[in-house]
Image (cartoon, rainbow over all chains, first blue to last red; front, side, top):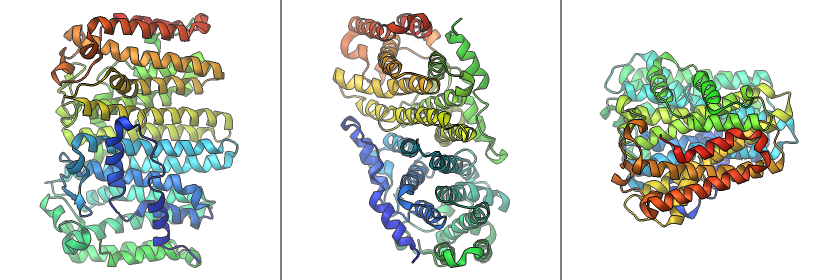
Length: 297
Length: 297
């Protein structure tokens, strides 16, 4: 039987702290600040996708665990930095005080820097286990490259720059999709691609799942924009309308709620279509995208 | 004839922007902010050390260039983040306005994040060129691991955390050396080790150069502390006494100037001793550490 979202999430939650290196007692507040944000909940979407894609491509998900945790470290660093006063200036994240509210700005910046660096440290450390298996090394380098590219200046960081600069300016739909594709989509695509590479994918599988990932990433963000408008604050762990209050461009602020719901459906349909050749074996990916329209948080 | 400091530095200065990925025009301010800090001068100590160590161990320095640039990207990101208002709150760096003074805090944080991620992106991209040469891959993974470890939670970030937390507290000498060893020394050691791994080092060479690097890293920082007390502001590109003004612990504030000069000499002697077996072939490393006592900036 296929593993489901909660199965993967449980594995991530159980092992997420395993890969944080032993931080010297003289810098113990760094460890505390990192641990605070890593254990403050979250859907673990990116690492779950990585494990599921690895599973889907016939890989060993336990071998993929360092990569899954690395991508969650990167996602977590991006949230810590996004919440900073100079960025989104958020006090709450998932119903808890944001990192800088608890540990101060300096430590929040450094915890983010530390998490990002740790992601690549543990990936490199993992590669060192396979010096006698060139095939396994190749898979790992490909996976690592996807993660680095998706989170960098042609991915997540680029999207974040445009998002910040777009505040108080009205954006075109094209620009908004650029932001979403980079800020959220790139790391989601990277998670799926990295997971596939850690298994044994054929080239068609990579193309199809990549198409799925692109549609999923954008759909996910539009569902987020819809939730910011009509979600339940208690379930979300934050106030609704917070994007609007910051004069942020969202899909629904530009196109209205009805068009957003329609676009969400188009994207989920395309995502489902992309994985049609694998229906017998892709229940996880199918459910994930179909459930987006009922997303509560 | 052995290459000298300026030879390596010239290569770095010429190629430093080559490895920044094509950033989309929609995020062009990210590129500008990154470029500003990368081209704002600097001694290029870490990449120079990496190339020199690669040369020393019989490697091809042109193949080492992505790693040398990656380590300078990491150093540059750390300076951008260090200068932020929440951290050292510096307006000037090398005689020019700091990144956040020109581009604002949000973009400075993101330029730092982007540089750090790019470092690992280009390293991974480089590894992908050598899928048919397992030996070269092994060298590269070892080099990359040193860079990641030296810049992370057991290296530079740890040192930075203790440094920030130590402001306004009087530290023991032991704690101060812990900060220096991590904040500055770890990346210097990583540069040398990574450069060696990219060549063909024997195990004794790694041990000896590691000892050299440890002494050099600490000596370099103590020379910096001495300069902060008695340097020439024009040559330094910043006011002297700036550490003192921030109530930062420096070697000379704890131990006095005379003891600092003495400790610097001890460390340079130990560094020179560590490379004694290679005198015929280690002029670069010998000169570098001996010139520290005459450092002007």
